[in-house]
Length: 322
Image 1 (cartoon, rainbow, N blue to C red):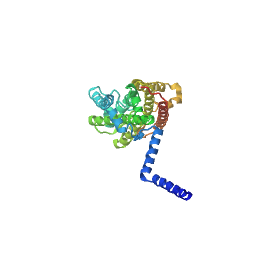
Image 2 (cartoon, rainbow, N blue to C red; image 1 turned 180 degrees about the horizontal axis):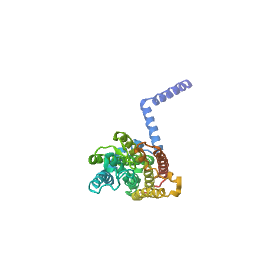
Image 3 (cartoon, rainbow, N blue to C red; image 1 turned 60 degrees about the vertical axis):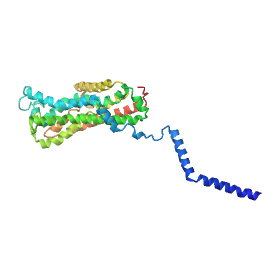
Image 4 (cartoon, helix red, strand yellow; image 1 turned 120 degrees about the horizontal axis):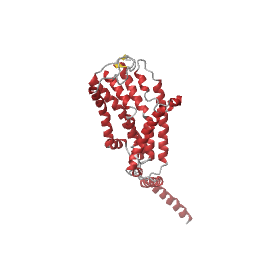
């Protein structure tokens, strides 16, 4: 009896082991493990955070908005409006020689006209454009009461902000770039492709030598708007009013420009976000000087990185109810 019992027990254990090693049992174990891990993480089967709110979808959504089309329409039309103003308006008021301003030389060629268009638009129109694209991006979702539904989709908060910021900066870069390029085209059509004349001295620089510098000027104009973009984005994260976010960023530029004119502040003014905005004019001189532009890039990048990091931190802890 004991022999039969001892012989039966190993056989039973061997059968159980064989059953556990079958493919069906292994697949069942994997599915059970996967189901338990899915329940523990709280994610639905097939959910991939990296596939939510794709850049393509966000680009299309922002492009179809009326404010995007209206802003780009204004930026593309402004150079031609200036051409008409110069064609039908009175001639330049400045005389020949060392007192000539950039506006007096705007009709001397396409490059001169593009530099003039950039100078008159960089301190306000481009500021409004960048503030609009970066300040309206998150606040508009909150004002439409769709922000909480995006997060409930669920789109991770950091990913939502990153996608919104990438698209907003792309449209801002397009806005800052398209105006001087259209001005270059309009100026060349209206006034010809001539060598550039330097304001103040009237010296002439070959157009072929200035064109690469003009590309640097456009890039610097974009970098100088980073602080505006960062402030608008921060305000957009913290408010449900797109107009408040845009207005706050524009107001910062106005206050900074006012403080910049206060000479009593001395060297403190160099740390204002708008102090180095016009440093790009040194790149169009006969002997270009890039020291001011380097300082401007350092100030703009430092401010923008800190402000954007604070925006991400604030949004992570924000109770989104709209």
